[in-house]
Amino acid sequence: MKIHIVTTGGTIEKVYSESSGRVENVASKIDRYLQQLRLPDTRIEVASLMNKDSLEMNDADRELILAAVRIKVAEAPVVITHGTDTMVETGRLIKARIENPAHAVVLTGAMTPLGFERSDGLQNLTESLLAARILPTGVWIVVHNQIFDVERVRKDRENARFVGV
Image (cartoon, rainbow, N blue to C red):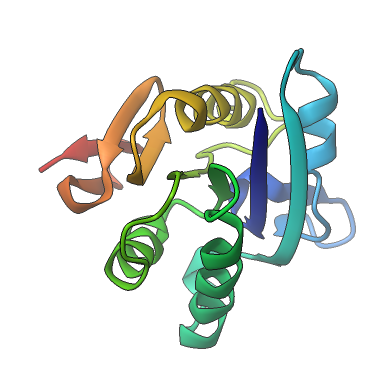
């Protein structure tokens, strides 16, 4: 089975910068995640659109994501790696503007970058790849062993998790 991954940045793609002493989006590192996984019978195609913190995304960035997803979801399921702060906003835009997608669209991210203690990035990516294979068409948020319809979820910043609404 083929799955498209569209990377946009967010914490799942952040690294620690020794020069600035901060965690920053520098370059896509999705390949580091994928090399750690066993994915028999799965062909992954990665498209790196941008590498931004989702709080820095603007309407033009979301239109770029929308355009990429519109093309890719006609062929296969799509997993979007995205910053958790605005992934619901992006997901709702996709749901509103792509009528009757042929496959599932799954957004995921991380609260802690790969390489940091207790990073959730690899878990969330792995779960999203499985979810993309088995979920019905629609737009979904997959994070921390949970699946949410994009219209029925919000980020609980205080507890660093997503909750249904």
